Length: 134
Image (cartoon, rainbow, N blue to C red; front, side, top):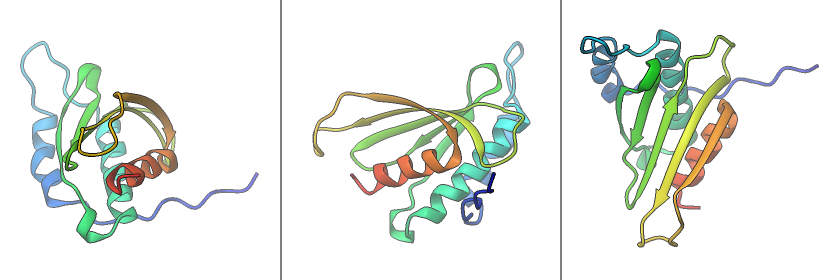
């Protein structure tokens, strides 16, 4: 079986680095983000930003989700793209990402859509299409 090349990676953006420390600090009774979920999210963010040109690079709010998952709430104009990244013990580019997307009335109106990705290629392709408005 042949190996696939791993996705290209951009540098980890400053906005992620600034929010990362808060992922491991949490209130009593709440789980912090799992280190594997954080690492998967870092690689996904870097791969997504490498896939679009500099003028299309959105930022995201990063926070701890349920059961140690990590939430990425992307700032995409006129839309909403939210990912919940789960910790998995598989090598990159394997991931487990739950996606919720919704486009506003400015674009072609569509109902909210949910998807689950098990590899970085599908997640990056979906991100690129969403950011480019396809």
